[in-house]
Amino acid sequence: MASEKPHMNLVFIGHVDAGKSTSVGRILLDTKHIEQHVIDKYRKEAEAKGKGSFEFAWVMDGLKEERERGVTIDVAHKKFTSDKYYFTIIDAPGHRDFVKNMITGTSQADAAVLVVAAPEGVMAQTKEHVFLAKTLGVNQIIININKMDATKPEWSEERYNAVKEEVGKLIRMVGYKGDAVQFVPTSAFKGDNVVNKSGNLGWWKGNTLIDCLNNLTVPQKPTTLPLRLPIQDVYSITGIGTVPVGRIETGILKTGDNVVFSPSGTIGEVKTIEMHHEMMPTAEPGDNVGFNVRGVGKNDIRRGDVCGPSNSKPSVAQSFTAQIAVLQHPSVIAVGYTPVFHLHTAQVACTFEEIQKKLDPKTGQVKEENPDFIKTGDIAIVKIRPTRPLCIEKVKEFPQLGRFAIRDMGTTVAAGMCLDIEKKE
Image 1 (cartoon, one colour):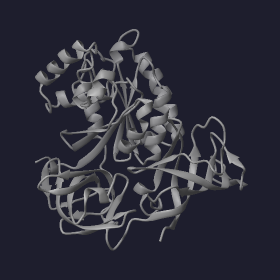
Image 2: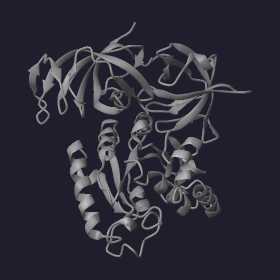
Image 3: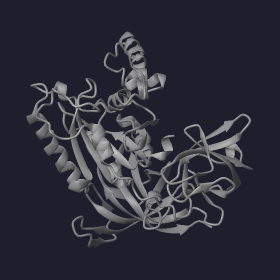
Image 4: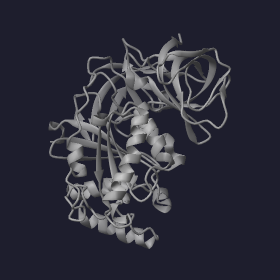
């Protein structure tokens, strides 16, 4: 039974075409979680569509449109076990149009594998994804320098070192410490150094990618906090009823619990809990579950709601104070600006009501009170008002529900954390 091993949620991130889906497909094949004939079937289909070399990616890319376009759109989940862990892999989209789905996936992860293509090195989205991973609370990261078979000359140690140096600068800049980061060269497409050692990388004396995964540590589970379970989807299943699906961030979910969904205030009783099609009496932080709730209709709850115990309702903000870092904005951010905030599984437009302070990025000291505007590179304390009810918690009480990304015009403009909440009555 898979659950006897410690469970970890793992997200693959990185620039489009760096080989994220291929890395996942290769791991699943070489750890015998999928059969070779499945890959062969995908290869034939991929070649028929003029997408040779995409066979591994199709293991994760189930949506027809993804196969037509050759990019990952939604967040896919697959499970596999290594010698040490039971993993749920979240394959997050790299294409810039789909970053909002990548944010949902990454906010559910305990660790990330950042895939960087050796020939190209750091690209625009490599930066964006690393920044988001850190902001969304992913503290362990593996840098998979992929496509080593495509460097010039092939399998070049020099090229690996150059990319490692470049990525190293980037991750230190966003605040990752050296010991939380592992580097590994691979060719996911050819199968070198992912699960099996490679003769082509004779100069590499370090680990394979799967060894790196086994070196990760399971984060402490916040089981003593009250239950917080952001809803990702809601299904209506014949013969069962309404089944919300999501990942438990804090606390424990048990059958028989009385729960409330915020912001709607809908109340119900948990009848059954299921994970990867197996029934369970209880579930804990990190578990991706579907659960059936008595007394709740499919239209009473939606993605972005948060489920909690009826005696400790998740907070709904009238307004909130946050510290934000502006990553990239073409002009300036002033009061009245209303971009979309991505927080756990919610996506809500929010308005900047006050820019209270500008901070010095190095020391955190106040640099300016009530500035007129903030711009790229600034860190500020701001007051925010959601345009519709939003469930958010203070980062010091529930870090998992206090971090957010701010997006506008198809890019991530800022990231931040909630310091204080004025609750909606």
